[in-house]
Image 1 (cartoon, rainbow, N blue to C red):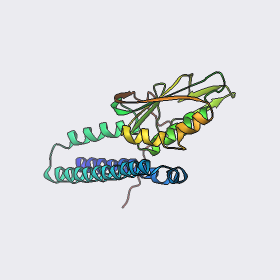
Image 2 (cartoon, one colour; image 1 turned 90 degrees about the vertical axis):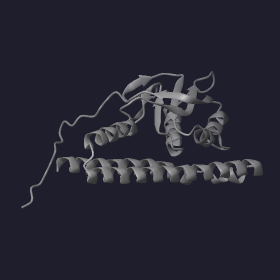
Image 3 (cartoon, rainbow, N blue to C red; image 1 turned 180 degrees about the horizontal axis):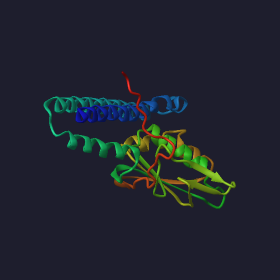
Image 4 (cartoon, one colour; image 1 turned 45 degrees about the vertical axis):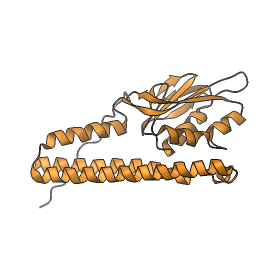
Amino acid sequence: MKGKVAMIISVGCTAFILSMVMFTQFKTVEKTDITAIETMRETELRAELANWKQKYEEIEEKIDERNEKIVEYKSELESGADQSNVLENEIKEAEGYLGYTDLKGEGIIVTLQDNENKSIDYSDLLTLVNELNSAGAEAISINDERIVSRSEITLINNTFIFVNDKKIAGPYVVKAIGDKKYLESALTIKGGYIDLLENEEKTVTYSVDDNIIVIAYDKRPSLKYAREYSESKE
């Protein structure tokens, strides 16, 4: 009975995590710069539309793959298969999404640094992280500090930038794992992130890579005041 409960919880957690990932990817539509698209040349617009079409097709493929996996887990549950192996695999995948394991894959590296006239502000980093998340990034780090749901990018004394309560200094190297074409397109679209920084005379460079490594978040949360609660029912 406990094994079945663990499997049901595992499937539920998987579905929740995947729904959050898909929701983040779908939000890119809402954040598309319509004004910029209207001013694009016809060839650029055709290319952009092709990119979006491919993106939605890949999202549909991911949904289908996840649905198949859920069906597979249910089948294994009903057949009495080794549930511990299935649960272990799900835990590893969940830890990857939550930032607790090192990850490697294709993506983009964006470097921001101060110049003689302009300095990089913490808001530049915060905006970049939001743009990458909206473009479907699966893992992000700033100067090898993993960005997770608990992360904060803050400015202390109007001077020092802190990420995950750690002081960082330029150059700021932001790594993101995800579809490198989508990530690049999201940042380089006319009127997009890189255009805005260059118009402000700030120094920003980027490169795409097939083997980007984003290291794990090194602070696992612990429960100090909360404890498990169960209400007995007669």
